[in-house]
Image (cartoon, rainbow, N blue to C red; front, side, top):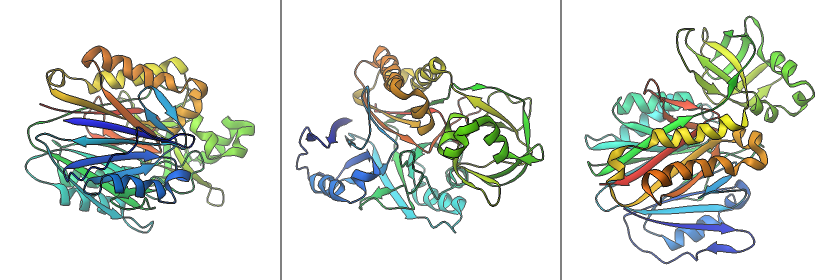
Length: 384
C-alpha cells in the first residue's frame, strides 16, 4: 500500500503540485470546506490529475492533515493498494427517502464473501445517520467493519456536499468496500465529555426528532441551560450534547448532537435516532478529557497485526464539529495526541481527516456499528 498526500490552500494553491496519474486502481479521498469545494473547480483539478481513480470526498467543518487543523482548504490522500481490491457505490438521497433503505441498498451493492470493511461518507444535513448505519449493517452482517462520517458545513448547518466521481453535491451517500485477506483495518471511537445534571427519560420522539424529556419540552430544557446562548441555536447546543443509553445498567452510552431545531413544533432534530424510553443526560466539555479521548481512539484503532504490515499506513480521522467549537485554539491538540500514539506504535503514519456532523464506527464496548456524535473516530488502514 502506497499513500500520497496533497493539500490546497488559498494563499499557495496545491502543495505539492498535483501530478498527472492515469492509473486505474487508485482510491482518491478528499475533504474540504463547502466554500472551496462547492463550485467544482478544485474537484475538477483533482479529477484531471487522477482521471481513472475512484474519487470520493465531502465537505467539512474543518480539515485535518497531520497535526494541523485548517478551514476552507482541501486535503487529499491517494491510495494505491498492492493486493486489496476496492469498489465504491453511491446514490442520491432525497429528504423524503428512507435512510435505512438507502443504507441497505448500498450494503447490498457492496456485499461479497471477500468484503472486509466499508468506509462511508454521507450527506450530513438531510440523512438520519442512525438509520443509514442500521440499513448498511443489515445488508452487510456483523462481521463487516463499517466506519466513516457525515459531511459538514462549518457551523452553518445549511448544506453539505458529497462526491463520487462527480462534482460534490447535496444528498449524495458513497460507500467504499475493501476486499480480500490483505487489508488490515483498525478502528476506535472515543468522546471524553463529562455528564452533568439529572438523568432523564425520552418520553416523546420520532426517529431523530426529540420532543420531550420526562414529559417536558426538550427544547425548553436546552434553552434553560444555554441562557443567552439559546439565541444562537442550534450551533450553541454543540457545547451540550446528550448521551443516550437503553437503560441504567448499560455503561457508556452513545452521544447525540443537534442538527437543527423546529420552534413551531418545539422539536430538536439530531443526527441520529433518539429512541423513546432511552435514558438521556446532558454532557459538557472537559478540555483535557477531550484530548485524552482522541488518544484513546488511536489506541483502540491500533493492533499488533498492523505493526508487522508492509508499506504505508493511513489513519482517517473524523472528529465532531462540537469538539472543534469547544477546543477552540486548542483544536490541534487532539490531532497531535493521535499522532503521538500512532508514532509510538508504528513510526510514521499518514494522517488526514475532517470535522463532521456525525461519526460512524463500531462501539468500543459492545462492538455494534453505530452513529456517534462528539467523538474522535479513527480508521487505520494498512496491508499485509
